Image (tube, rainbow, N blue to C red; front, side, top):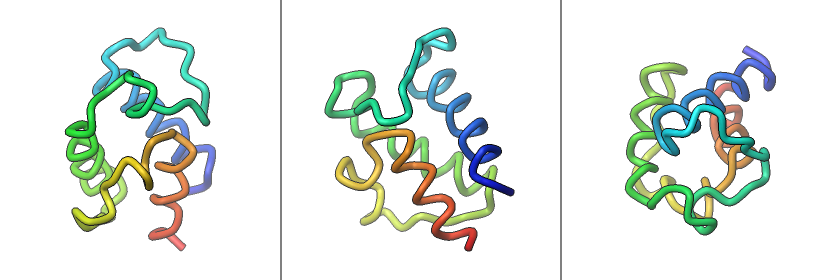
Length: 83
């Protein structure tokens, strides 16, 4: 799976399940948590989604605002484990 496929799957998930605004014009580098779009508890949803969709386990200590505040950071973290 390449970056574009990961991007598309994560973007759909973020818009539909985390932000719950499918038509929102989310920028790839837009802060989700520090920007107030979602709270930090949404990172647990992200962790579950990644495990179910990509078969990648992200340990709880890595599910932080510093690591996963933007779509780009989320994509990078998934691709890190796919390499």
